[in-house]
Length: 211
Image (cartoon, rainbow, N blue to C red; front, side, top):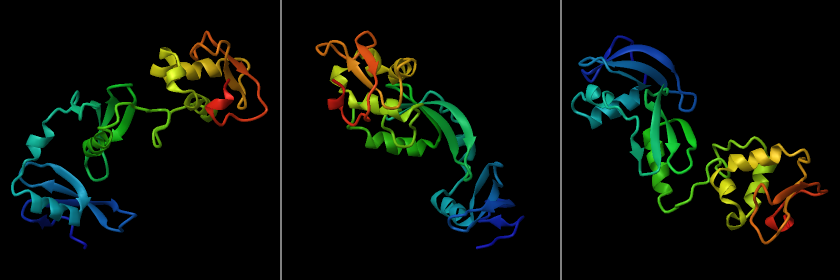
């Protein structure tokens, strides 16, 4: 539904301008200003009607004045900085995993809360190793080598910080995308002092290839 710029919606919001058009729904996105407090809301007309239906009074200044930096979401993710707003004027933040320090950039609090609730029964975090959307490995072959080593056979240094493993592999002069990592002493764990990089004619597919 098209509305006129300069019009008033629900006696509460002034239509200031047209921002863009949503490519998915083909709906027009407007810039609305609360008449009472001046709060800016960028959304579709349908979305604004829903907001007006859910709230009977203006509470924008109360919500916008809350400092969320340092707040912990579901005992898993900490808000470390505010990054601005998205197209719909939702606040975006950078979140840090409390366990490993992995950063989730430009994310809404509601999204991180849903994610944290899904992970409630999982005590381990795998950020940067097998995470689908935020994989920060420099080299896919190195990440494969890391995942094929059982955590029970890995030294604490590599288990707690996969970047140290990646640094060890990539800095080795024998490294190629078909190399393998082998232990000098199979009775000891995988560690910088107990591992060698060796050439191979086939790709590593499972942890059975390692020893």
